[in-house]
Amino acid sequence: LALGRFPPPRRKRLLLELASLDGAVIFDDDSILAIGAMIGPHPSVPSQTGARTTAAVSAHLHGGHPVKVSSDGDVTVYFTSKDASGNSCPAQLDFA
Image 1 (tube, rainbow, N blue to C red):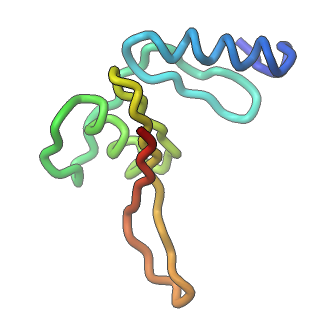
Image 2 (cartoon, rainbow, N blue to C red):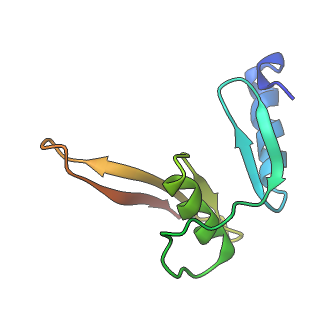
């Protein structure tokens, strides 16, 4: 399914509907790659509470740019933060 074939309002609605399914929606700049995907845990993921958190942190450690949407509507973005010296550490932004 190529998102580019849909105008922006329909694209947004389609992604919202797909995100309501269990499992991950995986996409790149041009198309949806998987719907309802299960993300295997990365060996470096510490013990987490909840499958969505484990999957999101694992996806980040595998090189993805995950956005976790909790069933209660909270959104968390996982990324790597770097300072001016080039030091980096895992980080997250939480939206309630």
